[in-house]
Amino acid sequence: ETAVFQTPNYHVTQVGNEVSFNCKQTLGHDTMYWYKQDSKKLLKIMFSYNNKQLIVNETVPRRFSPQSSDKAHLNLRIKSVEPEDSAVYLCASSSGHSGNTLYFGEGSRLIVV
Amino acid sequence: TQTVSQSDAHVTVFEGDSVELRCNYSYGGSIYLSWYIQHHGRGLQFLLKYYSGNPVVQGVNGFKAEFSKSDSSFHLRKASVHWSDSAVYFCAVRASSGSWQLIFGSGTQLTVMP
Image 1 (spheres, rainbow over the protein chains, first blue to last red):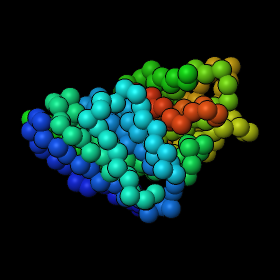
Image 2: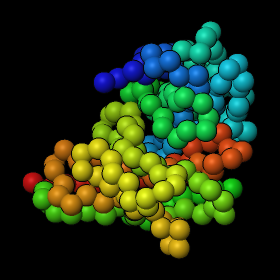
Image 3: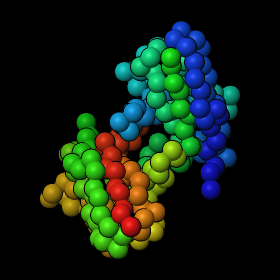
Image 4: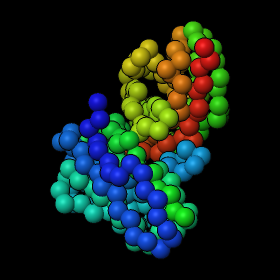
């Protein structure tokens, strides 16, 4: 049963446009994440957000930024998309950083043309 | 820094066969290990995890994994697979202290033939 909800699940846009993906979790977790999954299924952590503390993977380009209104929401904004941003973006949540059980959403597929 | 490798990109078996999906890690300290499954077009779902205690951990749907410190491994096994087990399986590691990242392996595509 899905408890991490992502919208939209699919988005096509042109190079240079701005895109936002929304994520909401109903599990009462205090930590949320964004992962990027490329066409080879490789997963790369992008951000973690816990108690208003943001941790950023230093390899993530600056055009990506997370936005959180409360601990149940963590959105992902891409300011000016590039072709290499085409991927599936997966949102996840957990209880704290110390555990390793992540609950994932169904993913948001981005296609940049 | 912890790393994880899954040596088999693809594994194909027949329904009813047993299967082992391999996972090796490198890290000098205490570590969390887990397995996740991703069906086509879906998000990842947690299968099982190990931190300490009994090195054999049971997961959902008949999956189990065995931790071996000497081999630096955490292989996933199932005695009799079903066609619905066809999916990509990810091994993941996290250092028990000082790390916020859950690092995923490259995944193994399991295909179960009827």
